[in-house]
Image (cartoon, rainbow, N blue to C red; front, side, top):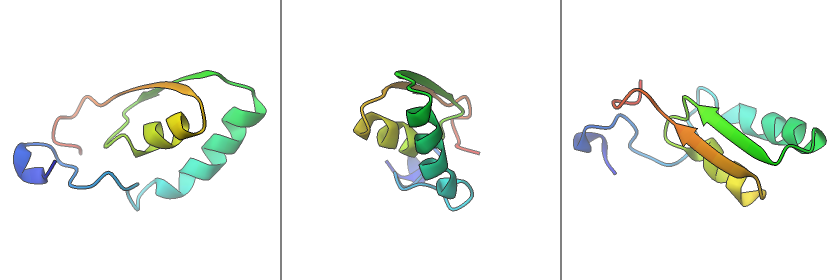
Length: 68
């Protein structure tokens, strides 16, 4: 999906602003033996994808249709 489709994210890659947080979050959730995660404000869903790859049941929601 491109930003011209009315959504502010033009890539499924983690954004520079918070992509560095994925590994610590995955480590913490793994240590807590969490099975399900709700990611509110999930942006382009990159963290949701990483969580799902690691076996978490995950749902994400993004309120801002423009991705701000």
